[in-house]
Length: 386
Length: 243
Ligand SMILES: Nc1ncnc2c1ncn2[C@@H]1O[C@H](COP(=O)(O)OP(=O)(O)O)[C@@H](O)[C@H]1O
Ligand SMILES: [Mg+2]
Image (cartoon, rainbow over all chains, first blue to last red; front, side, top):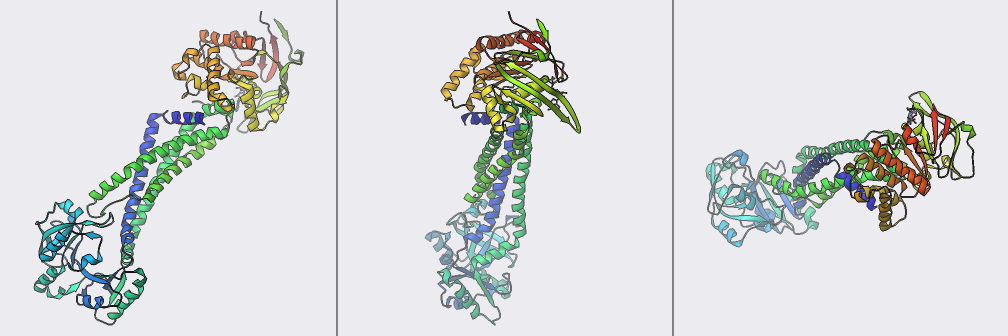
């Protein structure tokens, strides 16, 4: 056993250049695999992060169409509704379209009851309630543009005409890594007053309502009840769970996600081919040594295990380095991606998948060389050069 | 020196290796190349036999059959009463581990192992404790005069020294016989003499049976008996006694 380990360990270190190059390939592939898997998972994470008892009520025709703000009271009156709030997607441009980040006009009084994952100090909340032009920004967004309380931020409207100015009254944090802190919230009443002046047709309307029903057991019943209230009205509603809403959104990007997934596995397959070739080359060069071992009395299985050990050792070292590098690389990517990913957290599952693929590469790459080395006759092996 | 026909070789009780009607051919593409045909002869215990013959005459093939790393097409090879051609592959490997010490032309040491570790290698197949293995390997290395080179890698040793390590590896398990295929073929005269000296001593003082393939007359002269192989036929046998 220890003899086997000695031989494996020294064989690994034997062709340093070849082993190093193989290692680099392994690290890059398994790292890429881990990062791509993390990207895909994060894309779906909104779905996982959705609170199951939270409902979104939107225009039944399309979520791009608004609903009357007057529905607020009527939804609040529906049996089973604990809290309700409303918001409007603003879609403004900060200096340049490439600076994109989400902006919502929200009802400052009710919003935080329904979205407890948005953490704001009482002080900031009071300031926000005081200042009609006030806005609060997420930690990540504040960091990205250096926003500080008191700063005036100007957004150019795209859905709503004109330039809009907001005064930052504070920064909010996310309760956990899944919470998107790259958003900006400002007051819906400020939006509405301005629209009454600038664009009357857009006034008194909201993008959608968010409803908290307290328990997932009531989700189906309450969402039906809400939609029943507005049946046959001018703007019928569609109420679904936040989760269902987000799945609908993710579905639109599914083709991209599937491509990324496929690429991540292709990368592993390529390194498998490279590694198998390296191991075959190595084993071929050592046929005479293997034949000598067999002549002395070692079994073909022992010889095969030497190759297996070497291959798996290299693959696992590469895998370990890659796993170590994945979190820092992922978080750097999240930073570079600006607001696309609030954060890229490598899941335990991804780490396990990385370890498993490293192991699989090590084992599979060794299969053919093992068979060759085990099968070659002693006499032919001894005649081999090397 | 007396020259005898093969058939004249006396068979005694102290026969160690007995070949009977052994034939071997190789397949090269569609062609079948006969190498050895119907060989019958004995090798006695404590013999030092040199196998000579022109290149391609089948010396290595014959040696491989005797050592149990190749099998004949026909005939039997009996070593100490056991027909090794009947042994299944795994048993044959165990048999080699217990009975055969190999000395190759190109030494065939493990390049990643030190001299001591190389010599110790065959002992890992035995039940010996690590400590005991070390001691035996040390002893074997001292027998070939390399006690001061235990920590060296093969690449740090001369050809002659490497071959001496290989001899230590071959004798460390105390095998019944040593087989050597051109053991001096890759060595300068001086190193070759040292290696042959050691082999001769192993035969004379420790009673090791040695079968050595060589095309070098001076090497063959160290043996007690010389056989000439001509195109698969043991045509002549030269019996030679040491003084
Ligand atoms: N594994 C093999 N496959 C095919 N032909 C072989 C093989 N081994 C030996 N031969 C052939 O058998 C003949 C005898 O070879 P060998 O025993 O190595 O001769 P020697 O050792 O006397 O030079 C040669 O013609 C050689 O080419
Ligand atoms: Mg030969």
